[in-house]
Image (cartoon, rainbow, N blue to C red; front, side, top):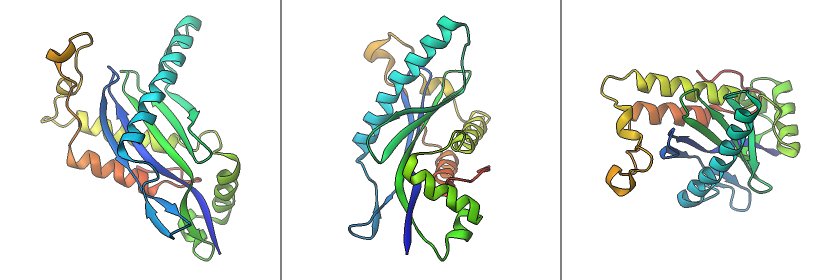
Length: 204
């Protein structure tokens, strides 16, 4: 017997000027064909990430008016549909991380469930999460690992963050900013997206 549990469908990194820096898409399980394929097109995932920016902006204004400042982990940004939900985190420099979760994206065989989930308790929590959503804090390991990968990228002497952050109001002369194409950063995000399941506490 197989169980469908949440998996990451997309990870996105958005610059401080709301420019997309990196998008990584992951396959989801399709029970109709018993195969794995992305649940949305790259364009659709880009639109989901852009729609998340409205929530970042709204919460930033709310925090500013209440004198809270940046809160870092914003948790659930919005539910896209019955399968997809977007979660977010903002660094103190304004870089935004978005994780789009497919609530039924990973097929897991009950015979191998304990080894994949880590423990029987984690599997039970994962199965429950697939029905009612994720518990608070489930995405923290993802955002912590993404932030660590991003900091490691910034420490690379060959990476110039200014090339990836267009100045606001510069129009076409400033350009949209470059995407992050660093191989190690891409591999880090791939590892994070493939390694996360509900109950995982460390992805570093």
